[in-house]
Image 1 (cartoon, rainbow over the protein chains, first blue to last red):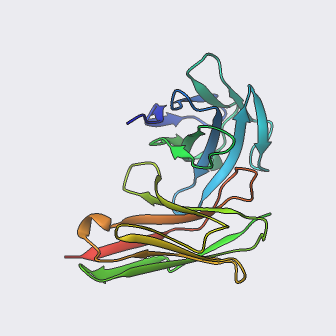
Image 2: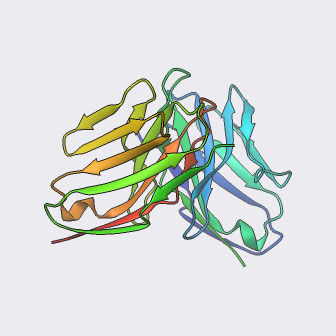
Length: 114
Length: 111
């Protein structure tokens, strides 16, 4: 069964450094998402992406964040200058089409900012 | 924006008993309500979902009910098994396709 994959599974970085989290959505899916989950808290929406542009973003997704689909398979989340409070689990999700609501989640990347 | 409340935060049941998890939502425009199961170290896995034009949906031991008037929906797991132990999240989608999640319920099924 096709799955969303994410790399790396764990990332430790120093405050102020840039990180790039990578996702490979399910191959025929057209809509892509990033969510985050701070330890012990809710899963929170960050951004949605369709047709090579951002569809929607939350107030969390400020200028320090950016997303990109650099090729036909990868979908990346970049944090330009990490802060301690960016430490969280980051999930990528994908959805097949406009009429199908189901989002499929990847296993996540645990980011720790020191 | 949408706000989803989920109760209880933890639930312990004996194997074979039923488990019920309840969620309420605030935005009457929400029209899609998925439930996800998250096992330790893994991403959320969809287990069942319901759309606002349906009041109940069942899939084997799992069922979801929706009351649009009261703006609440519930997950029912019957004949619970130890492998049902996980964190369960409800979510709501207003049609913008940005899911708003509840805070999660840690279900422990005691053998």
